Image (cartoon, rainbow, N blue to C red; front, side, top):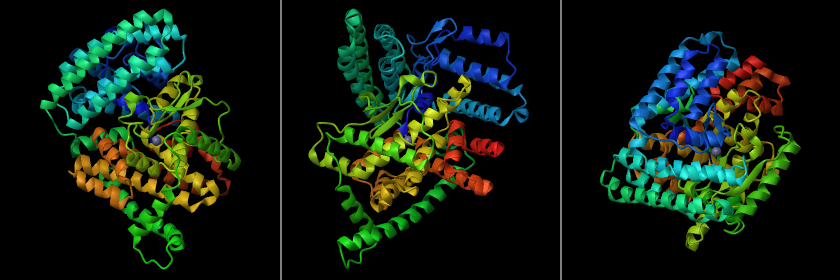
Length: 589
Ligand SMILES: [Zn+2]
């Protein structure tokens, strides 16, 4: 249910290779004055400081510098340089008259301001490099994995870059050991699990794929890197685990991060109140839909809401695939969704098809326990986008497999595929990646706003149902509403766990007894809620914003409102913060 970019931008901002002194001096000798020039310098300099993100964006060389063979590093002097970088750009942006910008420029301006605020909060307040071992583990994995999966150069050349990056992992591990002072137990556990995924990727998947001419060099570099990653594991288990701390962010930090990361006009307190009221409204609607189905299968029964809904959902969940058919079911559902979007003209589809469904890489399965979407590189969209589906592990006992398949049943996999792919994340990112200006494209894709992105995927799914997908099947609607409940409970969990000391028991009660989740799903969600903060609010807040936007545009345009036209316009803008999208559409009318 997640997409990948912002995780990276959030997790890896700290890294500054040694070259950045040179970049600063280049930049400051001839200060740009237009928004376009400033935005371009900011975006490309940021990428040059984050080589692993640059590779994923399709940005391989910065003037005078290759990036694919570099890796982020985390030292005190580099953090100081990042502070200087932010200070420098804050200064330069002050020279612009924001009120004089046109609506598109204003959106770019607001996005960069929001990004700078977020980076500053991470730098000064959240400091993940001191506390979060998953950041290092995921960086190591993703920096290597994107070189392997993105076919931007011949395999030999990409393996040369892989070998170069592998050579930098021992230094990364040394920095991790030096920087990590305390860590919540759960974060350590996830880092250990994901690091095992790194080992498997390096020793099996990549080893088998390595071209013969690079075999010796690869084996040497991978061997050293794996030994070093195992030393990191030993440090986490034997040292860091002696210094546990709390994964809860606390209200002050949460509120600051929420404002910078979400870019909406509501506060967490307002979102919580709205979510708790929607929770009851959706439960009531589910009861109304479930009751006729329930009475058919149990005539004369006078059960209350929880029983009626749960028993009906249990019936629906019986229709599911198998561990083996899981991937091919999703492929079939993708074609079905694509055909429906075309037939109903919900939104124009892009002509090319660069989407692949693949198993989630093992080192990412900690956070993507269900699936995820990995957009095509904004600067090289032809290289392809990936819909990750997390396979059901072969060593799971039958009862656990059954629980997962019941959650991702016939309807559940369809809804997941609509959300991740068409008309959800894949379609939205294809539009963003078609923005002609490369700077603007990077901003609105790589730096894209999360409530826009997640909100679109949820809103677009709802629109499919409203337009009659699967012949208005009430079982599909009930399954969707169950997912809406999960989305609502995600927001409640995020806010209550991080700012109101919600206990594990209260969280499990909310998920299992109020929102009908299976235990397996609820356990995974609780873990994710402790690994992330503010991210679980993006679905609910974004969905509300998209609903409100459509209502307001529909009202303003009256009889001339056209659904596909509205969707196309809103998607062509790219993932700007929702208040900016409202402005852009008002300016366009
Ligand atoms: Zn999503």
